[in-house]
Length: 167
Image (cartoon, rainbow, N blue to C red; front, side, top):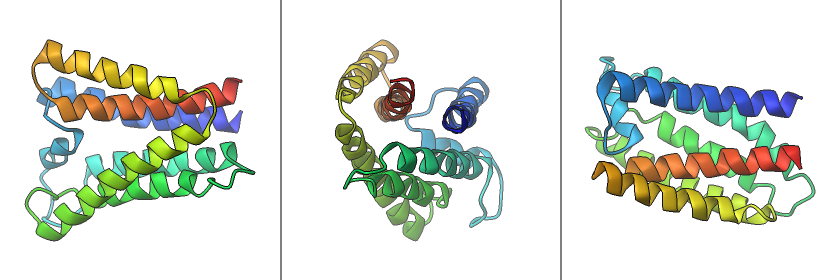
């Protein structure tokens, strides 16, 4: 029950905020572009940061619990930690140090999430299907390839975790 609650809360926080951003500010080329929609001090965290940080912290115990006994359990820690790197760098486009940390976080979160997905049997197909859907969405909207790829990766991880919980 706690696992379903963690997954649901993380999903609602992340995708609820994404939906709000798209409806309010339009579709951007990547989710990180929304970090500039809130006027804060140059180094301050904002609502976008809070969204990424909270969703990552909600996923971490779930990912760790669902991979207990696996020699790859550490991936359930590293994927959310990498998301935290992204969340703590809201001024990534105008601050060189944040740009580096942000992009390292994005790449590591992606790699660790894919690796985590591979260690959970019978769920890799979700990544392939959602990746194809991201490509189709890009063709339909003619923009925002990175955004749709992000949606596909988030969707894959949430789908994989849900599949693991119900099976």
